[in-house]
Figure (cartoon, rainbow, N blue to C red):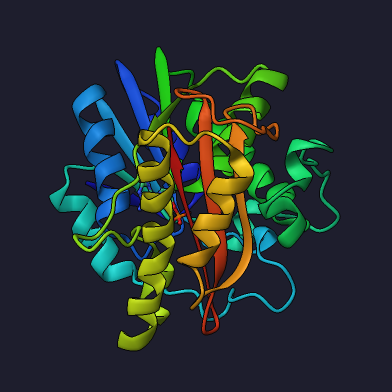
Length: 278
Ligand code: AMP
């Protein structure tokens, strides 16, 4: 595995690559969720590139940018063991200049759910993903796939839209959510949770499970499902519970095969999100 810290070194490393590139962008503190994306990229491509960059522009004032877990040594080892070819770890100065041209999230899909709760987050996320995709595609690979988790469902939908709207030559591959054995969706932020909070956090996935049970019993009414979900979320400071279609439009009835159920909330001071695609 080659570790590159500069853009020039990245271009040098990708200059004479042959075949397909599978790219997994991350903010590090790698866990089994990231690893699953990396493994899929490994099995489907000739070269696997992982980036680790804690992108400041997607953190809002007062969020955990400084406290966000950074584990370069352990992450490098994990990538090496997973068969990554190139690990790209740029600095903020390399990625940004002052007074940058901006990208804005779309005015409807970008400003619901996570977009209302974290205004500006998606602009910063799209900005860095655009930069990273352009950097990896710089040497014109014959085929270029980028892997993203369904865990961040709205992020994934917006990235797909950006690729479509800006005609970026990359195939976006959505990857299933990876959970701990007890059901908690894996997240780099889970390390903030105390034992007690972790137990409370399980109610997020439990609420999604209760929604599935209702749907399996043919209850498709969105309001009734949300009401039931909220009952299992009493120990979470809920920000939203939502059922939308795969285009993120609101729905009144669950459409099997075209619905995403999303939940977000605080357990203590830790903000967690989870979702289920039905
Ligand atoms: P992050 O480092 O949190 O920015 O995540 C990097 C990528 O890993 C994103 O595409 C996430 O959606 C994905 N990811 C994070 N956690 C999970 C998970 N539990 N299951 C699947 N994908 C995940």
